[in-house]
Image (cartoon, rainbow, N blue to C red; front, side, top):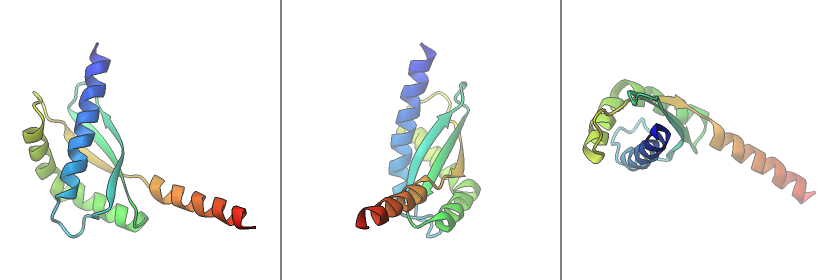
Length: 115
C-alpha cells in the first residue's frame, strides 16, 4: 500500500516542481531545465531531483549549483503550498546530462542515415 502512495506523491512533486522551475527568477538557472527523474525516500523526508538543461552540461551544472544553494528553500516552501503533504521533502538537485547525450546519439544516427 505504501508503494502506491509513494508513487503518487512522487508524480505530484514532479509535476509541481516542473511548474515551479519555470517561475524561478534567478538568471543563473536555465529556463530550459527539465526534470529527468525524481526519487523520494521511503519516509518522504528527502527528494533527489535529477535535472538536465538543453543548453548542455555547463548550463546544467551551473543551474544545479544555484538550485542547491539558494533556490531549494523557495521551491520547498512553494511545493508545500501547492501540495497538501504532512512533511514536504528536502530537495536535492543532481545534474543529469541525458538530454545532451540523447541529442548526440540522434546526431550520430542522422549522420549514418545521410550516407
